[in-house]
Length: 131
Image (cartoon, rainbow, N blue to C red; front, side):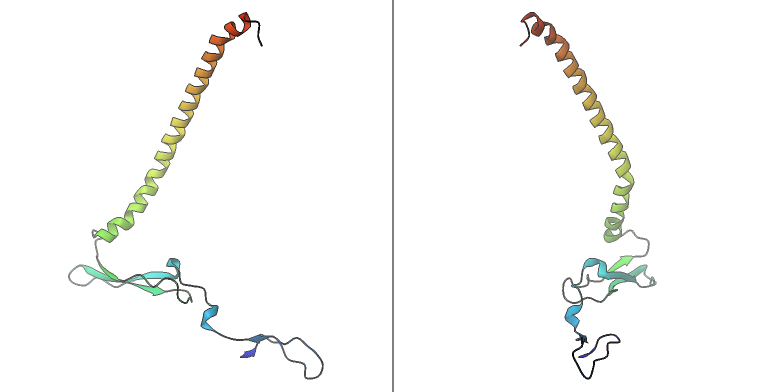
């Protein structure tokens, strides 16, 4: 237990006294973003070790991901899966453009169909005397 900041207690009279109680439980629970990959240099067999180091203070929550071995050329399964996200990000604008074009085309088709129905049934409606 210690005094918080530069607060000095008043010896006589009532005053505000701020105390700090340092505890590990004040830290937030650990999450994925609290850990960073640490890669070793490549050894003579072409492999390196990847381990995860805690970058921010946290307690409990998620544990650090387990370490693993990867090839230095990035052809192992974990490297391929990690880089798949980058491939998807590159294809995203193409897919978005495709869906936007398809939606616009569908909207135009529906508008033309509604215009066709309006012209087709307008004469019948007017011949029957309207409402």
